[in-house]
Image 1 (cartoon, rainbow, N blue to C red):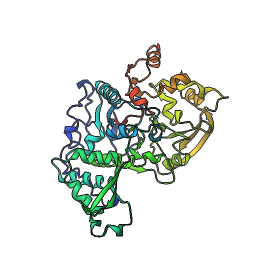
Image 2 (image 1 turned 90 degrees about the vertical axis):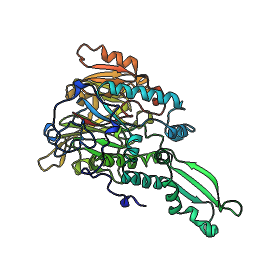
Image 3 (image 1 turned 60 degrees about the horizontal axis):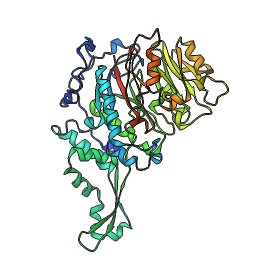
Image 4 (image 1 turned 135 degrees about the vertical axis):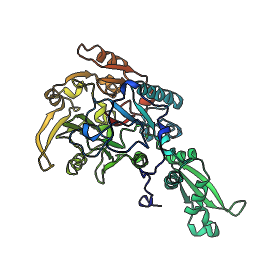
Length: 458
């Protein structure tokens, strides 16, 4: 079945409630603003409080980000599971930095999720969204079955003609028959591990023999930042720049559609864009890093298709470094609050190949963007924006010191203890910072910012 044949997953007027996804994730009472939503998302999120009237220059969208420092409301995460265990059997080939202790990784991820909840976030897990309502809504169950069908493949070891009457056991009909009998959890595991069963004809016992079981695990889905970006216009689906990850965006789009959350755009070929390169800095400014993962052509596509929603757009160029250790912008830079940022100190050295340069574009009356200035050192651009720069050493950056998560108003969850203390010691820093041990996840080449998709801030 092709992607085009999927049914519409959400009819907001008839879709049963997904409120049970939230029942364990309610924020403290003190963070509930009294706002009425302009959209009827109440069947999906009874606590949803976001309105287009409160968001400058955004029309008819509730799931947006206009600043990294606005309090986070809804966060999507994916808890590491079997797919990470399989990926850890060959870390480098799975885009991991080192081997992974799956139990420790899960413990770290749970502690991080608990920190998000303590800070008032409602946390949704990808697995829960995939399974949601399948027990009470046949349409939801059918949609999950069809997604699983596309992620399970049967491959003949010899010409299909040699299977003769047994060819039925390689067919979509046989696959569909089996999938219908599986539990929701089994279907999710199929989606996350993408099994390929290699079959050979047999003259004894059963008509075919399974001679090999191949798994193609989505071991990087834990990094929910990358499959999409949330701009001031809404969610834009990415196009990931690694063959190991190319299936992830489709799964995340399935989740957004199931939740009834608008997807306003999708990066097409030949462009590449990954969410770790994107920031909504402030209501009139967003940034995209381009280099190893995201491409300049993707930045142009965002501008030409009016997917940003900000007056200014800073394209941060990595011209010479392009190293896996600094693959995304959030590896070397992050926003602490409205007055402070973290930045890798080598990026400020004109003699270093780690220097980053900014091309600044400004939106015109006709909604097109024009280049205002170019080749501005990133640190100079940040100083021009009145940010105080807190430098991070090369050693600290390699331990993901920049890759914290800003939950709004300077409330930060960090994964590097010494840098967290440095931030907390700043005399004019008025926020709060919590340290969580995250080395079980950083072994997979990512940290707190990478492992979350904040898709609603208020």
